[in-house]
Image (cartoon, rainbow, N blue to C red):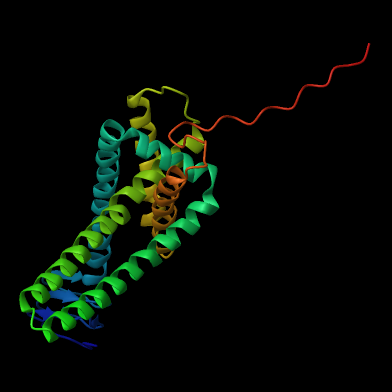
Length: 262
């Protein structure tokens, strides 16, 4: 904390660490510098140029948030557009799973995260056990190959999990939110799907960028999106499931309109 009372001449003040500067007297010279907070009640005859660092930090934080939001929006639209072009059935199946069974998708996201952690633990344990066994029986090259294989398996699994969490989950949730607003139709145009994806991407970016609740919203997006991918894959593997999860769910039948007896 830096305070100045009855100052007659100040050449330069530097409180870059976030100190407080108070000038309560007349100043014959100039007050120039950087401070955490600054106030003056006297007459400053020279230059009065004290930059308040709090305002700079707030502006920088806002700029960083805005740039991050634009980047996230572009990633969702680009990745989603590529999925609509190259693997539309995968994206449609995940979208349908999310909208048809949101609870199952949420639970699937939790199980997918637990499964990834379990995969890492099991892979490490198996790799260590095999490496120790091969070393004991004097099969050093096999031990080295086992360690290398374990590292490759962990790296590949972690990379795929990272792709799903960082990119695919946002795309699935963005498209699902857009389809809540505008229900998809059979053989819908890819351009209309891309437009809806952009609308959903805006919603995802806004809710995940909010202060305080943004982190929780991002966690929910990851769990729902990742779970929808896993849930759609699991349902597609069931041999006794006759439902085609790549197709748009049919509207429930409407109740018949009662007619007056006559």
